[in-house]
Length: 552
Image (tube, rainbow, N blue to C red; front, side):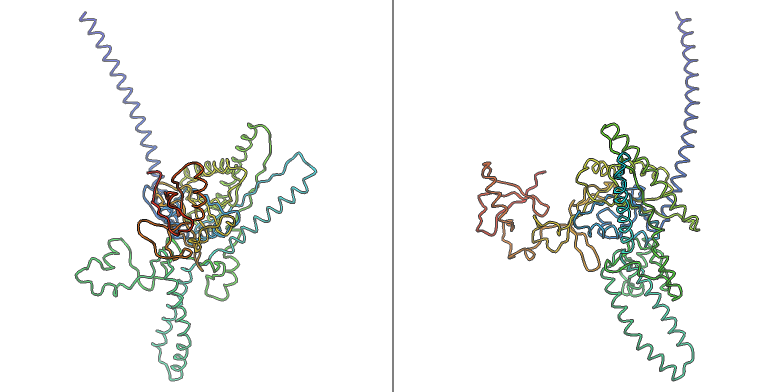
């Protein structure tokens, strides 16, 4: 018994040692492979992160994300700082009032040009021609050509009506002021005669009103400025009198924030460091001229906002109708794969054009899909985003600009599920049968937020209001307005009273009385209100109401 037991233990020990050796060998191989893979991945991530951090218009954020601005400060605040790289934003325009969504799209596109990023607008057309009906080829071809021309004209008008960049005007104004100061210094240093002195004083008097107008325009622009670091008080003025509270000096704050101070002469070159530019919707970006020389103005106009550099060739997708469900799904997947391949080809061509022209520095790419087909894009979009995220060397953000369909809601739901951010606009001008309340007459429309990226920020509300100024578009939170904005406004009584639309509640009282109910709920100004029908009278002005949230 003991000898047999010893033999078995020896055999077991030998087997265990061999197994341990094999496991160690396997672990060493796996660790070596994992180390190699991790080193490759880490090196690629380091390269991508370093390249993304140096891109113009891109800033690092929490969680390893990189954000780029949408061109509007209020829009950036809703998204938590901007749109992350590698994400898709779905913007739906109203069917009747398209100016609100177009303004947001213009902000987004103009910010790409201001940040020296690569803007690519891709119009997509669904070719509904069939191969069976040969008699209708003439009419089908005519309709397709007309649709093709309409989309091209719409994209051209979009590019030509981009808003004016106010930062560029200020930068030019500062350059002119510096040149005038240099000329004045040179004239003061040179010996001047009496006649020359008279001419210089006359020139100064003539140029003084124009300078005053420039200063007034600059002050008006400063009031509407967002994310502007150029207009700061001078350091010697702000530091005066700060002897006890020395830590509040601008120099100390700049050292703590690691901000490099530049000379006043080089402050005009800081317009490239602006994250979100300011725009004027009443002006046009195409009217701005870059060169000061009169000889190069015509060349700059010809090459500035060239459609061939920003607008890609129109992508047409052949659609075929079939009765079988399996054939429909297979055709949709095949068309989606073709669209994915064409999108990748378009982006690669535009990126390679920069390297061929001598621009070796990488740029962030902004891709605009202009009115694409929902069914095919729902298949191509996740493949395209996965491809760009896997490559890592192509920082890209996608904007899908479309109208919400009325017939194919299933395709729209699939596309919205694949997008990271989903928004829609609705204008009050199209609401004739059910107009908005009088409290919101100073607003032009509503922004509905269906989906956002939860990693950045949780939105405070899902409905916001649009307010259009002479030059800007403002997005503000809907709230209960004061009584001055309401009809027949007066003082608000105590006890939680709120002036409501009595006609609606009186009709609601009649309708609910049939169901033997004593109370009801209604949503007004994005809040739920609970009320009792016995307190409602048609002749009274105020009705007692209690704020009530059904979710709580």
